[in-house]
Structure formats: C-alpha cells, structure tokens
Amino acid sequence: MTAAADLLVTNAEIHSLANPDDVCEAMAVRDGEIVRLGHTYEIEFLEGVETDVIDCGGRVVIPSFVDAHTHLEQLGQHLVHADLSSADSADDCLELLAAEAERTDGGDSDEGDSNDDREWILGFGYDESEWDDPAAGRLTREQLDAVSEDRPVAALRVDLHTASLNSVALEYLAEEMPDDDLEREAGQPTGVAVEDAAAAVRREITTDRAAMCEVLEAATAHAVERGVTCVHDKIRGSTAPRVYREMAADGTLPLRVRIDYWSDHLESLVDVGLGTNDGDALVETGAIKSFSDGSIGSRTAKLRVPYADLDAETDGDGSDDGRDGAEDSEGDTEREHATGQWMVDPTDLAALVEHADGAGYQLSIHAIGDEAVEETLSALERTDDPAGARHRIEHLELATDDHLDRMAEAGIVASMQPNFHRWADDGGLYDRRIGKQRRRRTNRLRRVLEAGVPLAFGSDCMPLDPLFGVHHAVNAPTEAQRLSVTEALRAYTRGGAYAGFDEDRLGTLAVGNRGDFVVLEESPWDRPGRIDEIEVVTTAVDGDVVFDERDE
Image 1: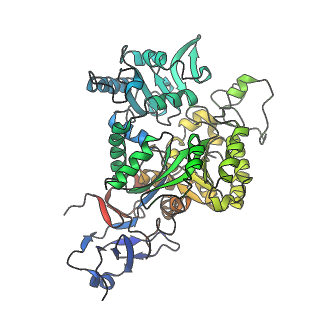
Image 2: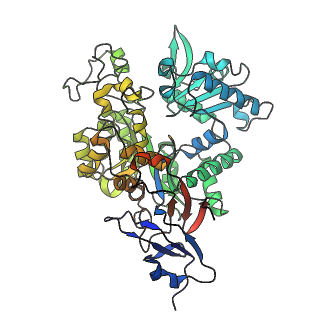
Image 3: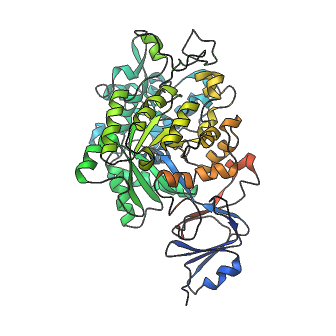
C-alpha cells in the first residue's frame, strides 16, 4: 500500500524550470521530498487523513529561489535600524536618522562594550544616485552632526562600500580606518569612508549574539516572504554562523544557509577540518570569499580606463579609444586613482586562490571592473580544476567577451545580480560613473548564457527580492543584457543551486528533489513588464509552509 503524502499541491500551474520546462497541475510531497508530479487525478489517491492540501486556485508554482549572494546580517540591521533606501534626499535621510536617534535614546548599547557605552545611531541603504538631486553627493560629517553631536552616527550606502560618519564616529574610529580611504576636503575629513575604512565601520557595528538573533530572525523572515529558501551568505564574523546553527537546532531557521566565509577564516577552517559542502540539510559551509576591487557606485571598482566623471581627458562616454587593457603611465597617481582601487592586491589574491584551492575549498571572488575581472579570472584559471571546484566570480559587471569565453572554457560560475540594472538606464548612475558605452556593457546576462558560462543570480541584498531582479533581467536596457522570463527564473533557482553543489536536490521541481517551492499570485510569463509587482503568497521548505498569505 502506498503511503499517504504529507502535502498535496493542486489546481496549480506548476513549472519545473528544468530543461525543458515541464508544466503540470499537481504535486505530492512526502518526508520533505517530491514524490509525484502530474494531473490531479494522478496524485489525489495520495491524500490521507493527515495530508495537508494547498489548492492554488490556478496560481503559478515554481521552485523557490536560491539567492546566491546575500549579506543577511546587514539586511537584518537594515530592517531593525533606520531604513534609508526609500529616501529621496539627504534631508529625508537625516529625518529618518533623527527618528532612529529618538527611538534608541537612553538605552544601553546593544553592541556591547566595544561602542564605548555610547549606542550607535545606524541607518542603512541610502543611494544618492536615486535622490531628487543626484548631484547632491554622499552624506557628510557636517550633515550627520546635525543628527547627534554626542553619539556616533553611521549611514551605510546601499553597496556597503561607503559609510558616512559624524564627527563622534570619526574620532572614535580614527585609529581603525586607513587615511587613504577617508575622503577629505581642504585637508579635513568629509565623513565619507570607503572600502577598508567602511569595512572598519562594519566591523565596529557588528552585532553581539543576542542582537544577532534579532537581526537574523528579521532577515530570514524577510527572505521567505519573498520566496527565498536558500541563501549563500557572505560572512566575515564568527557570530552569525553560530546563531544560524542554533536556529537550525531549535527549529526556528526557516530557510537553508550556505555560509561563504571571508578569507580571514581560511586557516581556522583548515585547522578544524571544516570544508566546502560540510554541514547538514539546513546549514553548510560554502566558499572562501574574497575581493579584488570595490564598486562602481563608490568609484572603487578597478577599471582599465578612468571613470567618466573623474577623467577630464575623456569625452565623457567612458570609451577606451581602442586601448584594450592599456596600462596607465607609471607614476600618474591621479590617473591611477581615477581607475578605482584594489581591495586585495592581485599578487596577494593569486596566493590566496592557490592556497584555498589547494586545501580543497570553493572560491567566491568579488570582481566588478574589467581590470579586476582579468586578474581574478587569471588566478582562478590557474587552479587545478576550476569547473569541479565550481569557483565563482561575484558580480562580473564589466566582463569582456574574452573573459566570458575563458570562463566558459574553465567552467567558472558567473554569480551576478540582475537588480543592478536598476542603475543602467539612460542618465542613471552607470551613465554618470562610466559613460554610455561602458554602461551598455555592464551585466550582459544574455552574453553570459550565449558563451556557455554557468549563471547564478543573487541580490547582494540590494534589495533581497528575486522577482525584482527577474524583472530587471527581463527588462534590461539592451539585448545583450536581457533574458527571457524562463532564463531569468532558472538563474535564480537551478543556477544558484548549481553554484552551491545543490542541483540534485534544489532548483527544479522534480521527483526526488526537496519540496522547496513558491506560489505566485500572478504569472511572470503573462506580465513580463511588471514582474516586480507580483506577490509571493506561499513559500515552502521540504513541503513545510514557512510563509503563507493565501486568502482562505
């Protein structure tokens, strides 16, 4: 006698997102595993006394999303502290920060003794490029001093590569932040900290265990509400991994977490014998994460040709005038600054890649500018088996055709963020930073697939919302940047699963795979121009519903 299913999904338009994308109307899940797909009459005999039934009312069901690049601690802080992402001006940001100051006034520090008993006033996600006056520039010390002259104030830009500080915060962190990454005017710090200085801010405001529970609970709840049931989380500290495992043990972790440890942890991981793919069904070790360059928004992505808004010698279109990879003249420090900066020197990065690969770890390297992609790709190509290790380049925004062809040949994964196309419209941030010609070459998602490069989508939490990212992939400005609805959904499901060695259990709805799925209020195939407005109404992990907003 066939055992009853734990869950039946009926009256649905169920897309497997396999190749081909088989569509059926019903699905059965038992012990967390999909056991049957087909017509309702083919599975209804699996209904038992204790079987749950989800009648989808004709809605679309797809595999749940795998977000291959997240920062859930920062997302949780974003949700818990002042959310600056909707601000239309510097004044809006200051009002939100002032409200946060009032909300947290008088309490003991949630971050512990490291904050000198003065509780930080924190805001996350501001993006001056989308303000009513995008020429206003980033938040400054003088502006943030108006929020508080007694407590440290930090406002982190959406890309996390820039932090804006008030005078108290600047003084408090003076010895932690390298001078080269503090912007100055007339010799005085403006309060804008980039890259290593911004990283020092992020380390300082890292939450303790009690607060980490709060921010990760908020972030994981936010993720499943948007249909994400697996994240590849880029983690620098040691507290979040412990909290994730505690949440999994006590049954409060609603999704799967693949921990991509910062390279700072490499020796410790080697010492304790914790390798890539070690773990359990909910929490496992992923890749070793490192950087090559910064970001376009902060003008720190490493480019072959200067930024259009910093190089007075260009015509403003960001063209390289046919100089494919031409080096700047030695000693021209101003021009060197205008091409961005290395976060990790290429020689040091190559040594890290060799060491981590030799120890058996997958590598996940941030590279945005074309010069950074070249150095990162060259290092990964020299590893023993890049395809077997599934080494990854994160972001890959300005990859050339040559880069993509080489990645395809080596089997290196492109871990990309389609939501970055939000800055790729005419007159947008990319136009201003790198000029129209290079802007059209950013994030060429179709070219990635055409080259045969494995493509995984993630959000970088800007924002964590796969349907927002799918929308931008489908509606990107140029043909080379644009994907079909099915291609974009696959990159956010099976693509992310492949990047995490999970394609045999996640990413498609197939018999034998886990019962991880989402129910969408409307079909993205029916409304490709408004995918970002589609609501997730149900999310399930192993057939257990972790989010549900269906009208009963």
